[in-house]
Length: 100
Ligand SMILES: [Zn+2]
Image (tube, helix red, strand yellow):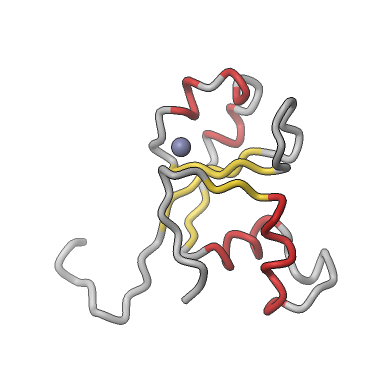
């Protein structure tokens, strides 16, 4: 698989999205890299093994917001994704670009 990347390739990130029923958290959703040790360590995620076992593949914060808050379901214009980013906490284990 490696060696076939062109400069135009968008980097994908494997992420785990936990929420929205995060008891005791400030944000509605917590987002970690799929291999982040906190997912198994943090007591907050104890009841969220389903989410931890189902990582998503995303390329940017914009795509993450679109995945969590589908523009069609939530009835907003896709370019206004930043309005929906406030309830999502992306942890430092992930270095997501805003958009491509
Ligand atoms: Zn993390």
